[in-house]
Image (cartoon, rainbow, N blue to C red; front, top):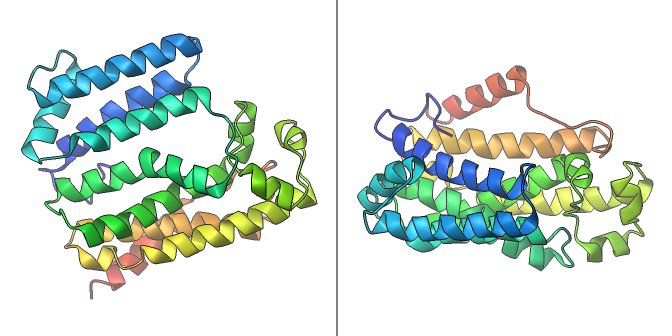
Length: 260
């Protein structure tokens, strides 16, 4: 996130938010703790968020975060929403409907985009709406990209209603067996994820440089991953699609042309 494209004045604040989220995500996911310990740590993280807003931070990550959230007037609920999503990661490993998955994305992904907008001085409902679309689509893209990785952790994010629609068996996904029903289900998910990306397509051109380039690259990168999933025949249980330096160079060139 804190790439060279971002101005130096913003990078420490992006890094502060990233450190907070990265550590919390590791608490939810990394080996070494049982479910009760993870939940207890994440509850403590929520308490530390409140302390950071009161200027009483007692942890290095929260000392940096305190300066960021106070300086940029970042709403408390954005950070607490992220933590609620991390807690959900500990206990919820299946989603019944696409609506359930979107609600998870609302808390796991959308707060990040809104925080970034505020770090650059934007507080606008229309920009938030477009940002939410991009962030939700990015989270969904990551799910379709990482079906194999998530299945090994016991998680399947393709909604059960869609698995039933295409007669796709969960046990075969967990066992890493690629099937035609799974291809059909993923084709369905990829296409509606593209539609969500398109709802946020105007956001990059609605903000100033250099955030404009950063958001354009983010949008193009997500769409590129979807294209790669499609071109692979949706065989994500066999090969995880990723972006290459060639992809990055092409996306950067396209983004810079938009500034001319």
